[in-house]
Length: 225
Image (tube, rainbow, N blue to C red):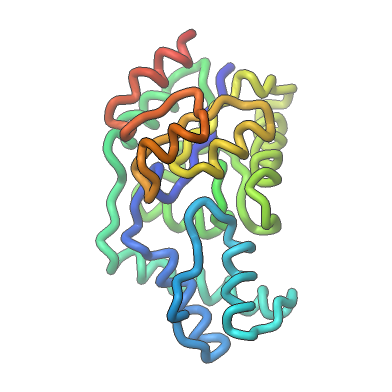
């Protein structure tokens, strides 16, 4: 059995900045703080790590109480941002995940920095969520490597048996996707549909490097092999 763990933003979808806009809107609504003058780094990071930086930038205490205030408001405004930002499903994604989901020798999961409810909102908006059976999410961790470990554990729990990491393929658009795949002993597929160029991704040494998922034949061949 092969396991494909997909990142979301920049890999499956481009939300038009909906997640970032929802973060800033929630910060202003709950803590009366405007969007930062200098952008916070979002790409490849977990929502908890992003929120920590956002709180620090605006002198908001990084407490469990404030986290509990922030995320419900974020989830409340996220659908509005998804509807207004003109995002898209990225090239080849719909046909690829539909094909893989129909194969008896492949299981699909998520490995994303999004909190789980945010991942569901984003993928649900584009009709993709139901393709994925399990995942690792950014609810608790600052490190994407720990999210990868959660995703591998979730795959094992969903299948009810051990999963050899050498049968796992992590598909993402950032250097952090490659490094977190390595942290669990999985294969790494880098896709240049986010903010990183092919050259930048090539420098991280992925097993496969793709311009986009519109030509996923190398991935399919690897899974068949």
